Image 1 (spheres, rainbow, N blue to C red):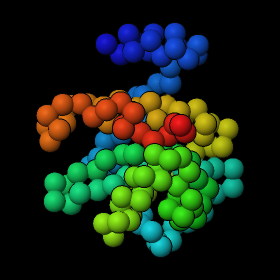
Image 2: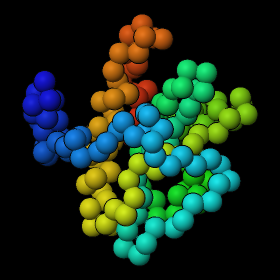
Image 3: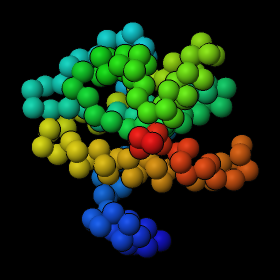
Image 4: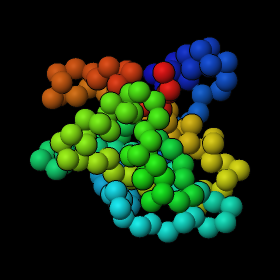
Length: 157
């Protein structure tokens, strides 16, 4: 199945598929990585390095973590503030606006630290690919799969 997905990615993008096994997605879903909230401080990455993160919404009632965006940041606290103040695409504006209406904020889950800047773009793409596949799996609460374009909001429309 994974080989078929990689082949389809290659035909569609004209490039080799990023390897999703380069990202440990479970640390986010199991809340085993650093989570920061709006206003929290977090150390700036060492020179020549960055962090990989996921913007998530959490539901404590179900202990659910939903990944909505994947990115990289040298200063996670600053980047989280930027996401909230200037969400970017219309889909991210809608998502963050809906959270703010409920007096909630997205959180940032920092799942990879000390990433060399030279590797950051490749690893970010692999992480987007990995989380996309996680977020499009069967959801019992929906009694089905979430819409593909609802999975991650990385694509600007």
